[in-house]
Image (cartoon, rainbow, N blue to C red; front, top):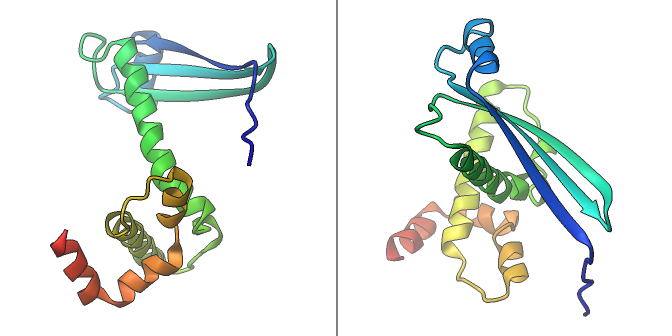
Length: 162
């Protein structure tokens, strides 16, 4: 199978940080007293110099500019999205979490906790596979994860043995 190479695609990220007027407004008017900096990130994706996609993200932090430079602000934001994409992408796409609803708030919380436990058990229990796509697919299999939950003694034995 041939992989299609994307040519001419590039992404730019622009970050604006404000630690005065905007941060003051959020602190005082919106009642977030610990906000010291706010950031606006614009991400643009171009294909052959044609703008294909533009995204806007906003963030706030209780760290001062001396504690969290613009470079660190951007790095922290990107790390957040790594977590978001690593966990929630699997839950949303492979497990269809967004299509499962509960009218009972308590039961919904329990279902969410069970999903998290199942996903983490899968990540720990499946042996690593050098084929990245296969490994990614294996770690998102809800049926195997459910088998870990319905056999808790066996699952705990495997986890302890690691």
